[in-house]
Length: 151
Image 1 (cartoon, helix red, strand yellow):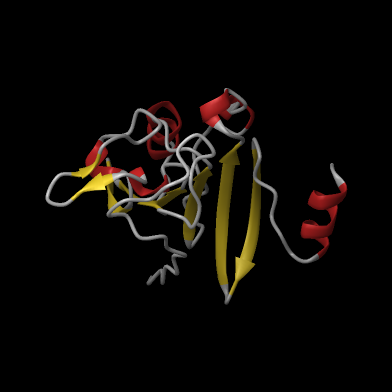
Image 2 (cartoon, rainbow, N blue to C red):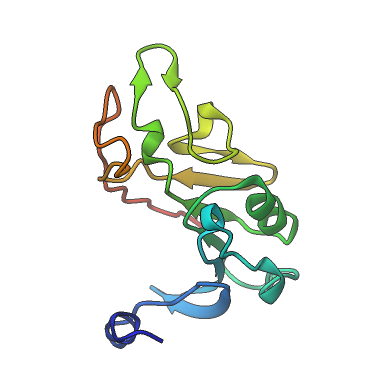
């Protein structure tokens, strides 16, 4: 574990890089699992694969980049909510058309926001930054997302 990861963990951060964990927040028991960055091939879902705990209040899957292979596996295992980023919302969008690219294999219409992924909900944050290769945003406002999960 890096000093940065150690510091984050000391502050309550839950590391989900190819890891699974159970935590409690506001009385909710959360069965969470995640993968390292699928965009650069660092994901290894086999380390955390298997059914989510059906008695958990929330079954949460997390991935930096929303690649279908990861989303499909987490949804098949029973995730209620899938969270990802990486796409920057498409970063360069056209009005009435949307994202030109997603920088992953996700459909362009799901490059940002809340949508369905099988029986799971999927939220992809457009985030605040840009790619170092295309340091602009067009018709895609930066965002920091706050989701409220209702039981």
